[in-house]
Image (cartoon, rainbow, N blue to C red; front, side, top):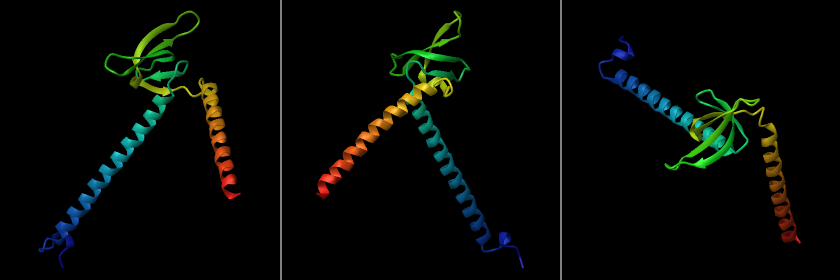
Length: 137
């Protein structure tokens, strides 16, 4: 009565190989899904970056975007103003080096965007509803 792992016919080895293969494929799929989610979140954040938005960079610099322009290599560069009370400094950074948007300080900016998006979507819903009324009559 040998163990399944030590069977002479190689069935135990096959089972181990299949389990290892499933684990490797599963970890690759999970890694791919995690990377896609991170890329989507990063792209969403980069789309929100406008003049006046307060951000934090990967280097730990907190500041407000003063200007956004195109660089020679096709990337976007932001001019960040950091400091306060007359002790301000400016630094140019690549937009890809923005780590996060300060949601607390930018709440009024994002609320205005949400209000504008809601009014546009409400107008679209009314138009669709009105066209359905015309079709039923």
